[in-house]
Image (cartoon, rainbow, N blue to C red; front, side):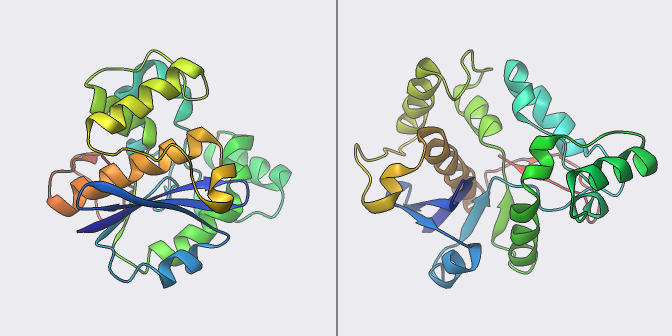
Length: 220
């Protein structure tokens, strides 16, 4: 069985491929369609990006994900509605969100605008894609809230240890341009692959557990 985990980084996407529960490769792609073109044998694909956006924010998935990560709750941003993210400037997005929904939209959310729209165009037409959140994955692996943020030394050591304990041993060195990807993005992609493997095996759980048709779901 082959699964994959994808995370956004500044030049596109980092992909961790897992074969029979073992890390097979770490690669980068400028655009998501390039990855899909080489993913014919992949059973499940975990992606760290909002896919099904809310008609009325906030999504239950985001609220429940924050509860799952505890101290790391600030890492879970609220997925904005599609009409907000489609605005071509942050000022317009923020204004529409306040006028229509009574809340603002974070700069972090809007900064992912192009990647969210890119992922939706690909993932909603391919049922192998599942939305994940790496911090929820790591908290589930640990069976507890993580004490250290993912960009800290202790946080990265802990997350790598958790992946290793679950059979996902990342290489000491990555080949080519993948070696320039920030550490936390590689760790997040590996965590996404862990959830994809659980989904392919039928062991994953969804947040929320009882999603309505068309409602956004985070898998772990």
